[in-house]
Each structure stands twice: as C-alpha cells, then as structure tokens.
Length: 200
Image (cartoon, rainbow, N blue to C red):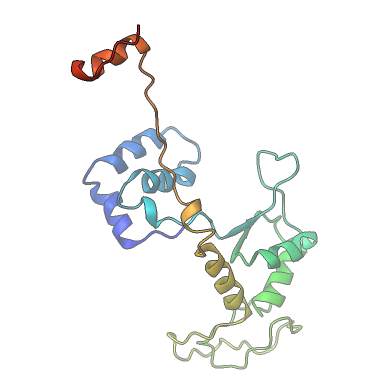
C-alpha cells in the first residue's frame, strides 16, 4: 500500500474524527493494518476517489481457497512474471524460486546487493549466471541515478493498466446507498397534504 502525504496527515490530524473512530474499531482485530487504511480512505469523502484497487502483489490461492495463500514455487514463475506485480507472497524460506528471482530479475549474486544505477562496477545482464566474483556495488557512484531495467517496463505496463478507463474509476471505493423503506401507512405523513390524492 502506498499512502500519500495528504492522506497520512489526515490520519494523524483526523479533523472529522473518522481515523480515530476506525482505529478504535480495528483495535480488536488480529490483522488491523490489512483493513484500517482502506476503510478510512474509502469512507473519507476527500480520499475516496484517490484509491487504486490493487495491492501490487502476486498472490496465488488454492482452489478452494484456504486461510492463507498458497506458497509460491518455481511452478508459479510464469504467473508471477505475467502479473507484472513488483511484489509476491508467500514463499517458503530458501525456496529455489527465491534464488531464481535474485538471478533472473534482480541480477543479484548470493551475499550481494541487488545492483542499481548507483553501482559503479559492471552489472551483469539479468539472468546471467552469477555465483560470486566482484561486487558491482562495492563502489557507490551517484546514489540518485536510476537505471530502469526490464522490471520497470513490467511495472509501467501494470500501472498503465490499473489507471486505464476500464480499470480505474469502476474499481474504486463504492458508496453504499441504503434505501429507507417507509411503511405505506406512513408515506402520507411525509408528503404535504395538498399533494396527497385519494384513489378510493
């Protein structure tokens, strides 16, 4: 979840008391962070239309769904890549798919950082077999330099899709409209007498 500065200020100052009320409501939940921010954003008029309905995670569920997502393995590789999501969950500790993510997506050798634009050394191409050697990030260059890789292109494709006309507005928070059903006998009490017609 990405929170904007104005939304975080609203959470802190809570000028209409909604953030505090929702926080008290969620105080007794096991996983309150999973619902708190969404609930506040979708119920605050100022922020309702600023939401994007996607958590940028690739999550695979068993069929029928269990309490937790299924543990991702190498068998899920193609689905993870096709989703273009920058994050995924859940993984078993030391699963081989984590090594493949390091090697093929991050160009990261064991025990080294994932190289970025700020690395002065030569960064091998994604997918190159890296088993050690010189750390390209041992010497830091311009820390503000960004060098987009293939992952950036996938993320751009995902964000463009999320903000498209067919995905953005229709998938934002919905305002529930509650209709009041007034018994027929009482309807006349709510209509000015000159407008009530007798149909007997």
